Length: 155
Image (cartoon, rainbow, N blue to C red; front, side, top):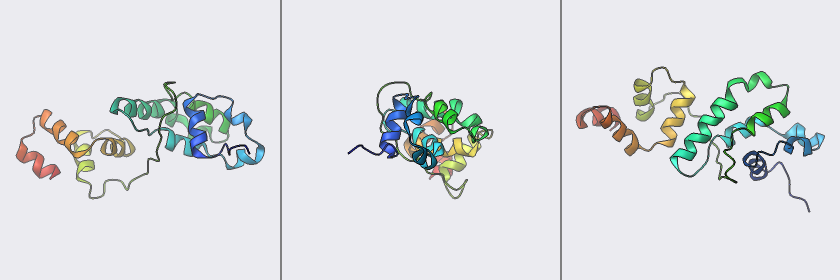
């Protein structure tokens, strides 16, 4: 029995392999169910080194996010832009990057928002997600903050 191409693991394999024919191989029924938005969300987040994680995130933002919804009537073209993300280093372990409520009570988010006032909320969310509290505190220290200031801002 042939494996379902719409399983996320199979879609991500096509994503990482830069399989530009993947969309063409889907049946009409499968194309109706296929979501390039899900490819964008899953494709932007990988496990591994922070450099690899940053690469996928930046590559997704640069290559896919900018005009993604303008291409809404062209799912094949959206898929093709998704295939430009991978650095062609084999299959990566992707995960769902959930959206968070903007700001909220998250001290890290609020701190990053102060440090990067021009950054978009989704970029701040991602920074808060891929850096643990130790990284953020180290960054604050490198920015010249005292231990007392860091404790006040971040706990």
